[in-house]
Image 1 (cartoon, rainbow, N blue to C red):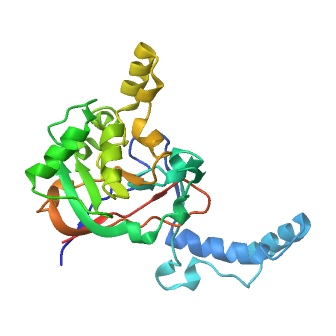
Image 2 (cartoon, rainbow, N blue to C red):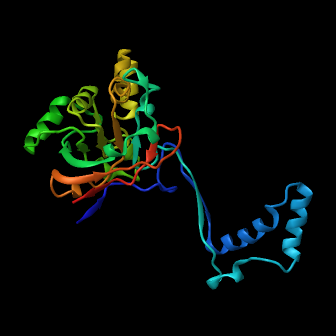
Image 3 (cartoon, rainbow, N blue to C red):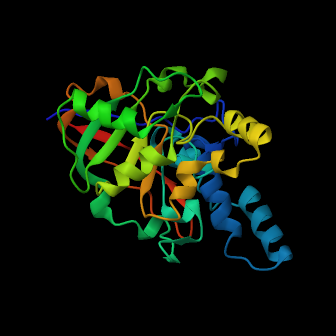
Length: 273
């Protein structure tokens, strides 16, 4: 068995629409923090906490880094990030409060059965920056690999845009799915569609400029808005789709982190060969 990582990291040094902050407590500082917190955390009033803190620094009953082998306790990191950071799964609730006339599924409601299944890679690397991936493009890509979709296939749209990750180009240099292409895939019984671009639709500025020019609101996030009509999920910011050796005949796992009452969550997407 071979497992191919299809995910980008959550990286505080990477360019992000919403900056990531990772507060790190080292192993040695973790030991000192543990001792201090034990001395003051059980106290309720300010004076009691102050007394406990003074007692910790002056007293003999201490836990500190010297207490542990190699002067190390355990590390601790705290991440502040959008649920749309890195490789993530968008649930129907992200698209709108209602889907198919009922309350839209949030991330904890997404059936786990949807998140593990047969994968299909569709090569759309010929599409350029700002292009719309049409229904005909998707159908032709399937014809090129002689594959017929079945319900619950996990379809991966390969554009190659992940090569720009970490640069400014990643925000602007990619094609996006059209409403018609997305709808056609969902009508085949597909519940999860993934793409290796920053967003599922065309780049933000392309859509906004088209709206300014035409006044047509249908050009704004068409695939996202379609998710109010028919239930599906999509994955944004996949990577390494070109490393999958065959366009089908493999499994995809893309389970989301179970965060309460949100419309998206980070995933560690992998292809299992």
